[in-house]
Image (cartoon, rainbow, N blue to C red; front, top):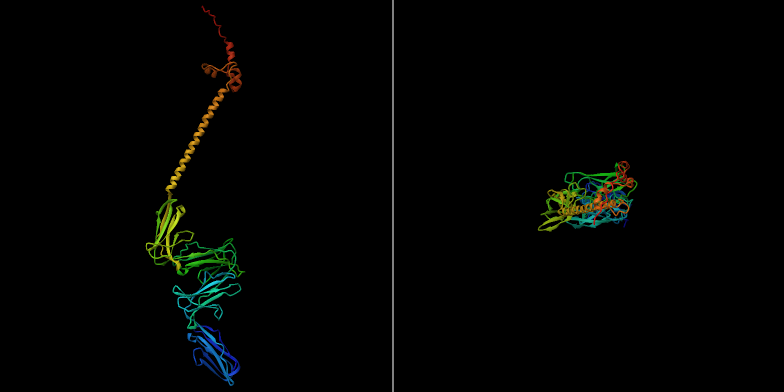
Length: 500
């Protein structure tokens, strides 16, 4: 038996429909015949005869079809005998079926050295899926499919993911009874490796509820001087990148526009930053959910309790209800910077509902509210919006009015008490001063005090020694009592005798 030949395909064993491929069979000794066999066919698939001994044979397929897919081997014949068959060549034809989808869970950004789960799925019932690296000819990972909600899928665990390696992947689907006929390749998925650099921020100046046909701009920014920003969406393969710009000093930003909003835009987004001199990306931003309304036919109703106009401090509850089954309800306030509130649905009397408690009413609760419903299978696709509810907050709550009245009355009583005490103190002070002044007036020596009928005179007459205590300009106007007595002596009194 002669040595077995070598068999290969040019440009490779994996070919697209309609491509040209050359199958080569080569050996070391000269031979007059070469035969190419395809598995499942008993007679040679192709044969070549040589007039002179040759050591190679080429079998060309100008336009590949799915019938050319299969397992091949070749052998040659010479005057000394027949060779062993070559190792089998598996010729794969791709593009026969529609492409599956390839996504990373939760996103195509993985920490350096970590593992990541990739999901290859399709609505067509493939038996198996193959995950390959871009540029590679051989399957890297092969898994049997699993059924999931009417689709089939396979979950590939890839890792450890390290830098300096090409992490560009795609997947195919095929059936067990025809393993060489594959689907079209999925869209390419590129894995990005994240490091420990500080995460950027992801936000939008618009409502996160994106009406179909409208545009929305997502802004990824950081105070770190990143050169490039990337935007990822959970379970999506593409990872758009934008160069950073500086809207003002100290801020680096990139804008990502979602044009003509449709259901494919609904999902959870994150962004990353990267320096040009590094292959690693930053830590992911906090997630931002973009929601698409009008994707479910149901329209919930929204009511407010105790009413659309409430007093400040009163508890406010908004009730969202739907006749159609819903798993989650969302409450959104127009113009609010915060994302919508979410609550799980509670079945009630053959309908779904959720009660949103807003707490004590304040001016910050004023505004227009709408609610939406969603289902767990498509959490980012919403129902039609409910009618708008305008919430007004006015006045004070009854218990606050009573409390304020009590406080005002208490303050008034306290002020009256303070005023009474001040007046009482002033009255007592005046009485003490009057008593002190009376006590300070001097009396003649030996006098025990003025008689009651002399007190009026005492208030009008001054003794000479009192002049020093008077103002200077009054001294000259006073005539000493002693001098007046000397100037006008009283006539002597006549003695009268009393007879006994």
